[in-house]
Amino acid sequence: NIHLVVMVRGGIERYLKTYKEGGYWKGKNYLFDKRMDQAPPEKSQQALEKDVESHCCICEKKYAQYRGQHKCAHSLPSGLQCSVPVIVCDDCQSSAESRPGSLSCPLCKENYQTPDAAPDLIGQKRKLGLIEKDGKDLVTGQRVERKRDRQTGPSQRLFVGKIPLTVTASNLRQAFGALGVNIERIHWIVDHVTCAFYGSAFCYMSSMEDAKKAQDLGEIPLLARKSKKKKYKNNRGSCPIFVRVAYAPLGEKEIWPLDAHVETEYPPLGTCS
Image (cartoon, rainbow, N blue to C red):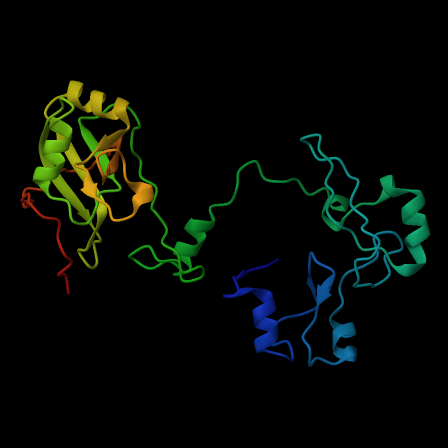
């Protein structure tokens, strides 16, 4: 009956180093290295023993040390062995070694069944307010991309990535045009908070045939630039730059481009307040 599950920022080890008497932590932290387990460094042994709720999987005596590398031998519905590490006290070590097939973890003893689908951890974080509106995960510090209900089939709109920050709309049109495909309009993709351009754009092609041809190429070479590093030079002394191309079908309710959109020659510099 657990009503609230939280994630500790920085991990349990950092929490125990910060709150040396344990804080809200109860028991020990199982580790996968030679230390085996970790406890609050300034918590008394008596208090640690009082926290113990785990038992030896054979005699059911209270015990809180993983020793002997014993694992649960219970078979899961998938046919695989559970193999979760189990606790065996000192008195039962010889019995565990002679009958390893009898060992079972607490969950398997309760006939726990693993779920058919993985939990939606991102959705749970959103409900807890751990992911900001701009997609930043407050726990990991990384940005979370929202999944979109979007088709993966052919589209006249293409996503173009790995674009140099100094590129212009004319550069893109010239690069695509050199391969016999034409861009009808370009929409620079920017950060919705800062309006800064980070090297990607939507390009709406003149026809489905042009879109398919560009997609089949996968990469489009831009005009070569001079390179001071000899190891990157080709025979002409320049280094080609390739942008990546992929279909970008519209979502079911997506309106694109917006009526207010105006194509610009240069990508935005980021002027949003």
